[in-house]
Image 1 (spheres, rainbow, N blue to C red):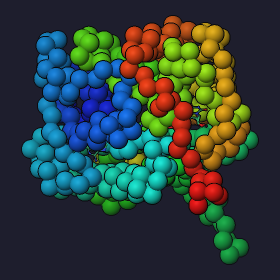
Image 2: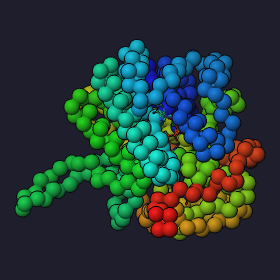
Image 3: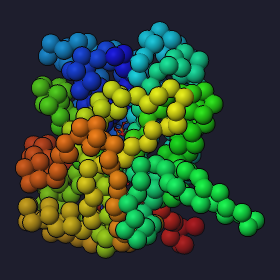
Length: 392
Ligand code: NAD
Ligand code: USQ
């Protein structure tokens, strides 16, 4: 297949591009390197020394795999270049990672909120618009988030894959409907993913585009078999208070003896997936496009759920580093249950990589190797969901 990976220089996009290329697909990466510029803005780069993309691509060719193509395009801003690329490549599949993906970054200031909405909504809309014009038969595989469902009280009811049977009541009449699961985003970032869902619904209905929306949980781990082939292929690893995600942050904190930063009671339950399973899920989704003209296929891309304080306890027991319960900078339920249906990926053959001591230790080892690159002042999350009254 000819596959374009939008956002292919990022944490999920880079190992996915390598995985798809290793399977024999003809891969082209599109990126505008905004994430590398954000590293400079935040003064906290990847824990691992990621190489410039040109060097990464040379190293990949040197392993004997087919060359991966590259186009530097801002997907949100440079529509003409995007459409021209789609026309010239005529992709079978477009994998879309090219969005601002950190919830704390999206809540930092009015500028960050507006950037996140502008970038994410425009990028997704530009992709859909360009597909209609240039490659209407292609399959879009989008990386969405479990956070579109929210973390309210579901009383143990499993979260279905995107849609729910509902009975609508109005004016004394009732109607049965199969509707998108009601959204309940917990940050500006998560809200952009709920807006993406509406764009997909419209373009699937109106233009018949084939779309898979993968509602992914929190990704942990950093390496895949391909990124381990050469040190120049190393994947990025975010540890800072904006982009670092919870389990990778705890493992990095364990590596340097920093108390594990649990927000609030740590009663938040979230869905998780290892980066090795992320790339396999995308392989499986790309291999099984939905029927042209069918509704958007929504897949819950997660393998297990955990409570934040349980993860902290696990990492603490492994490392001897203490757990620290901090004031929660976010506005989120202090405790929630989470039961998730993930049947589609299991039916497609995914054998989940479960949390294990060995895999946890592997991440701690990576963090120890690069500990001199950690700026301890960037660890604590300072982005607040609600400004304290004295700042208003
Ligand atoms: P990342 O920030 O590491 O990578 C995103 C890449 O997209 C970066 O290389 C960035 O430069 C690029 N990009 C952003 N805006 C762009 C634009 N307008 N034009 C061109 N390139 C652009 O993020 P990630 O962790 O790899 O996440 C990728 C996707 O997966 C995101 O959409 C995210 O919402 C989703 N996701 C990530 C996680 C996770 O835990 N990392 C979990 C669930 C879903
Ligand atoms: N948390 C801590 N301590 C920390 C960091 C986080 O207790 O040091 C808590 C947070 O308060 C939150 C939970 O851990 O309750 C998860 O936070 P996170 O930063 O790991 O995850 P989140 O902000 O939800 O975002 C990440 C990715 C995002 C993706 C999402 C999947 O950055 O791109 O969409 O995970 S999901 O959470 O399933 O929606």
